[in-house]
Image 1 (cartoon, rainbow, N blue to C red):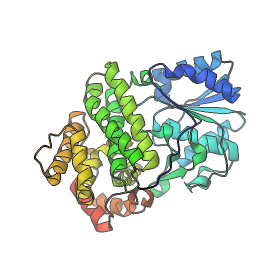
Image 2 (cartoon, rainbow, N blue to C red):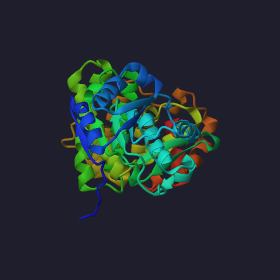
Image 3 (cartoon, one colour):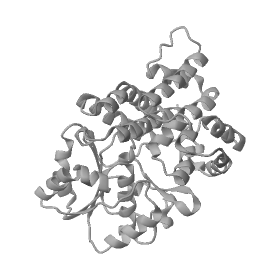
Image 4 (tube, rainbow, N blue to C red):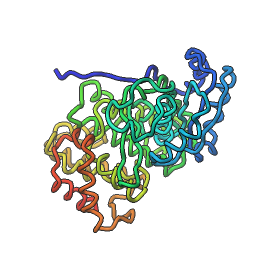
Length: 384
């Protein structure tokens, strides 16, 4: 049997009403002065209010930084750290999507250790624990609340770079589905298809294990069974609850088995053309799956089953191909574009994108099929 290690936040609390524990958990930590990190959209929508209220009732002083940006940059991370450096915070609380939570992770490091975000890019560059961190997602998708990575854009080099360290794992991740109930349809679709991509890529990753496989199969079942419903009717609480749990399981998957080529291709595309991360991963996913099929037909055939394909009597190849068709159908149904030209990418950009993709070695290394530059060029051409 393969060996594997599991590295999770100090505590993960899932379920309707789970936010209620935050005050007690902050007191248990001895926190006196907390900073909530969020973005303007989430702040305006209201999910920050109950977090602040519950912390205040627990006698924790609370400030709010609401200037986290979508696809956060290292430059803005450094500016935020400088702005907040005199705050004397002993607890950070990331509330929002992956961008807000990643910003909170980065601030946990910079406010504790100083320097610039660039100093900590890479694996295990953080010298020790940062400011204690709680993570609270308001979307069902990114999984950032349970990972030991934070991703930042560097526009100057058109690249996305990651801080990876166990020291940025949350002390507490609270996944309360009620905080996703107000998520608008487009954001629900983008984050939901990202969660499905996490499950599929973690399941087929060369780092997959029995631990991640079990969770990713359940993640696929939950996501595929509920994503169309929550995009169509955001008030469907049962579907929202299932999506939140599926996204959490997908987060466990990428935290341990990693994302792969669909995520690798999305990084340079997002940095150059500034589309939402989840949309890009969802667009690219079926094109990458098509190229990866020969590397693990049994698993791709199993994916088809989890996506609702009737595979009885089919060969693994036939079943796997129908799985890709099912992913495309799901993406189309929730409004995800199927071609990169549909989001304004010119064909002449493909060669540059292919070259930039090859530099995302951390993610490409997890892919079930080793990809050459020519392979990546073909995927980009097919996706165009």
